[in-house]
Image (cartoon, rainbow, N blue to C red; front, side, top):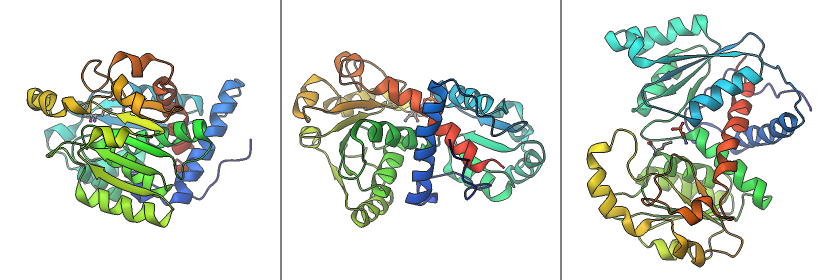
Length: 314
Ligand code: CP
Ligand code: NVA
């Protein structure tokens, strides 16, 4: 495989919108290569001796494990630090924490509530800061989603994606990456659960430039009709547990079930960022049946995250 491109060294990845289409494409191309190399059991120790710190304020299976395994496979190591164990929890400032951790670590991944916290870390750190999920965005997930769609359809532009359910962090980053690559995305959510208007507007403007389109509707059946990809995410995101009852009620018509799958394109595939709540946002058939690419999508978290780390960590 060719060497690692150097153009993104030192850059943070806090939002999909922080990277241009070409930069995101670099990550997708490298992820494809890393996947092939791994299948051939070739070691690519391009980050020897580097350490990625992971500061998480929320639980994680995929993001944490794929990042820890990913940096190890690149020859480096991971240091997982629950935020509660840092002096950050006792009032040490974000700025000071970022300044100090920059002296020890080669890169930092954060999973937290506020997007502003990730941006503040990125502002003060002299090492790349990677967003491992906030209430607003999940940009690493969006890369794995795009990789999975591109693998299946051989392209992103013009692929028709229906996102059903809560207009949340995962939906926001999916919208942004859909815009960047000219996909045709319809997000179907009930009133009060729509994706943020600013994210929709930015994604739509981008999509138009790249030959795609972004639409928001409250009609899940219209969104699913003819879609190449049906995508959903949990209805109750981390931190929203108190709203669970209302969410179960309000989002029920948006469940990704066999009926919606029947409306989609004959070759349609099902995506879900996981964790899934079977019987809530998705039923068994779409999740485990022949149209599911969910497990491939989960694996692609590893390849895309390795690509991001290899591109940004010096
Ligand atoms: N999809 C995703 O980010 O999963 P985790 O919460 O397990 O990291
Ligand atoms: N929207 C979900 C995604 C989990 C990966 C959450 O924020 O909990």
